[in-house]
Image (tube, rainbow, N blue to C red; front, side):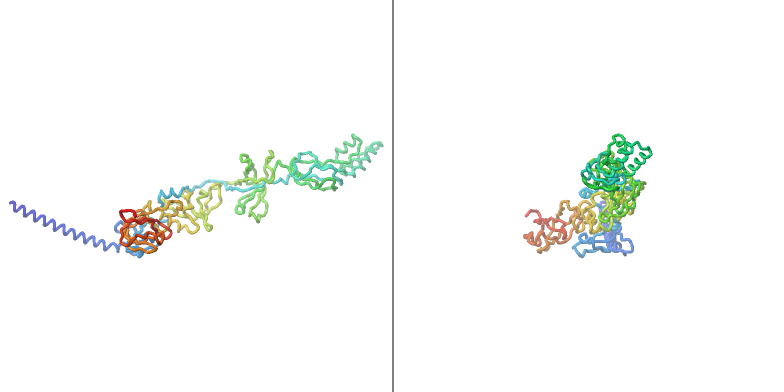
Length: 516
């Protein structure tokens, strides 16, 4: 009975081993079939989708991480390094616009975001203005008779003067005869009509009524007349001196008032068409920034300045407190009559390369992408966007000076992608990190020395996880031709390297397991 049970057990074990062997060979055959089919699936025609059978993800192309610019249509061994080509998947952004930046790198770059927003704003702008005399309110002091300046009270131009203050005293010889004639007729008891005729003659000779009244009261001939200022202000012009002869209609002085001044605003040529008479203006002076001087543009002066390329607009401002004087420079905010809905971004977000304006947009998947935009006028600290963006999009508001360059946005953005390799596990292109202010990052691994030259050392090294490199054989440049003189082929070493403009450069080479 025991022998039968033992025989049955032996048979069962043998049968199980046979089935296991069959299953093993079947599995191996299936694996080989799948393995042989993988290249065919992966390297399907470019017209169809290439699917990686291991991951089921769509492959855009294969490349060597050390030479990322060279693309291949199918997998295989790299012609540049002793390593297999690696796939670039569609969901990794190979076909998506922009790049993904590690959050830590974003913080190092000082990247700050802002939201594109639409707002009703007035199309105002900042300008510069200069105060001037209001020529429309200037008064002149003229002589109506032929005479001589007996005394000049206003001694020099730009002298302040009050209303009714004397400007000059004139001696008028021609006034002597008509006054004596009038006194003779009066003392002779002549008819009233003759006296009136004599008075009319004196008025015709521009003898003031006040002087004729004084002649009646005192009976003394007056040959001097004092010309006074008609306005409180400044003697802006003084055209005579003491003892000078004056003729009828000659201007002795010009008095400009200070209670009202003109403000001449320099309008940039690009904004000339946006300013019309009636536009509001708010002006401030650096000496009194709290007080604002308001007004409306009265007229646009014709002609563009050939030197400053500006159009001049003129308005009248109130200076009753007499705190302003002509020639002062004013900061002017020119408003608009109507408000308009505009798409706005921070002014610092717009990058002007000379040929176009660009903003860096953050896509929904977190990638950064340069977008060409058409910008309008600046409104305070913001800039109007006429095209290229939509309301609600997110843009880089600061730090973009580390992203953009005058050379090419396309050549700089991949450098950001390479700089994220350590943090995000992405493959790093052989270009230097963009953040010049960040510390130079080093990488280390172990390997065997294969070849040594004056320029470089070739290693068969272990994987470098920080760069996403597998184990491979490649050459690293020396910092100098006489560096690492004790390194020989066949040695097992531990080495440290960094990324440079010429590729990857060694910084330390020491025997594995100890420091040399």
